[in-house]
Length: 232
Ligand SMILES: [Zn+2]
Image (tube, rainbow, N blue to C red; front, side, top):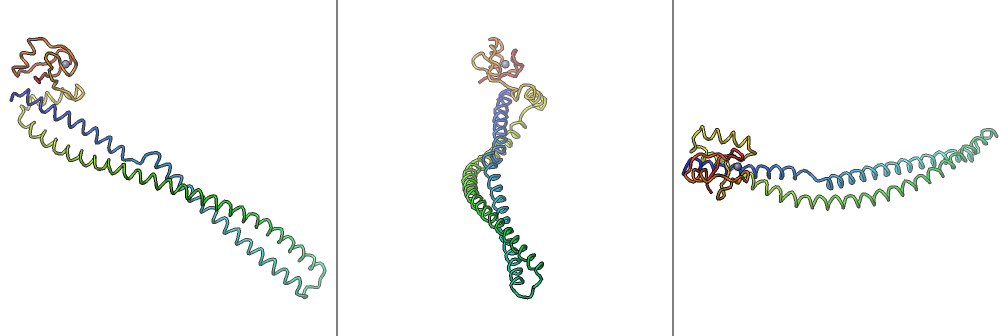
């Protein structure tokens, strides 16, 4: 096997490695949670917070109703105890009781409003949790496939790189250096295949003389793209 032919084998390996690395990058990128899942998570979090808020509000209001009821009862007990005889004080007590009852009525309306909000929040939370559950299940299936592909790619790349190392060891160091530089300058392709008389790197037609030299295993550069030419 000529050095050029060996270089061409190396090129094929490098091209495959490049493609697999690119795909691995895409697979890793695709394993980030998709916007739909993030949105479902956000919705569920908001729904939970909203329910918590209205439950607390409902509890606070209920406690306040209890406290106003106790106060009213105490004032009533005092009013009807017979111990208070001062007309001014009796009138004040009566006024206080009326005021407390008005306050209680307002609070009871607020308790009912809060209860409606709690029920709405519960409905929204159930819907949001269900949506999130579906999104998570869908995502887990999808990411399991991606994880599998990731493992396959990693394994395959490991083998390819080992093979590449062994192949490169058999190639002249100066030629290998030139190859590496050409690859950097020519979008990863240093050695182009010749199809009849056409360079597959740039689609330029190559002279019959050069084709002959390529066939003989000599080092020939494409006049169009500057890549090394290899016989198919
Ligand atoms: Zn070319």
